[in-house]
Image 1 (cartoon, one colour):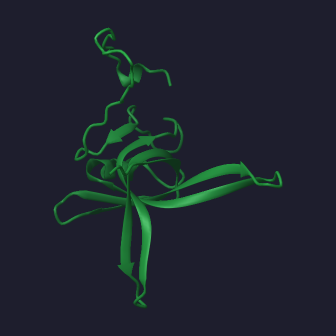
Image 2 (image 1 turned 180 degrees about the vertical axis):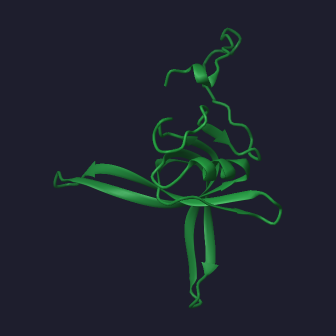
Image 3 (image 1 turned 30 degrees about the vertical axis):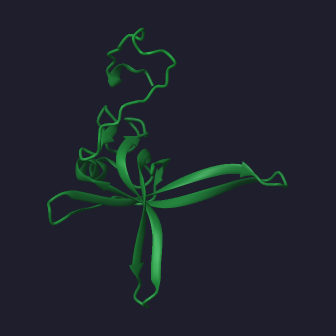
Length: 154
C-alpha cells in the first residue's frame, strides 16, 4: 500500500521538542494549509485545514532550532491515525502526519533566525529520496548531470 502526504503551509504553533527514552528526538507542532475557491454563487471562499505533524531524529532537532509559529514549510510524510480514550471514557481519534522530509520555504532573511543554505532535510532513518523521472528511452543516451543544490537559482 502507498501512504504519502505532501503539505505546504504555515506552522500554527512553536515546536515542542522532547526526547524518547531511547534518546531520539521527537518534535511536535501543527501546520495550516488553505484553499481558495469560488462557491456556486461566485463568492470567493477560503477553506483552512489544520494538521498535527511530528518530526523525528535529527529532523526534529533542526525543526526545533529553525522553525516557529508562522514559518512556511513543505513537508512530506505519512498519514497516521492516533486513537485514545479521553477523561470521560469516550474513544477519540485524529489523523496526523509523521514527517519524513522537511523543506523550509521562508527566505533566508525572513524572520530573526538564519536557516542553513540547504533548506531540505531528510530524516536519517528514512530511505534517501531521489527524484524519479519517467523516460521512454532506455536511459543509455541520457547523460548524468552533477549539479549542486546551491547552484540552482530558485
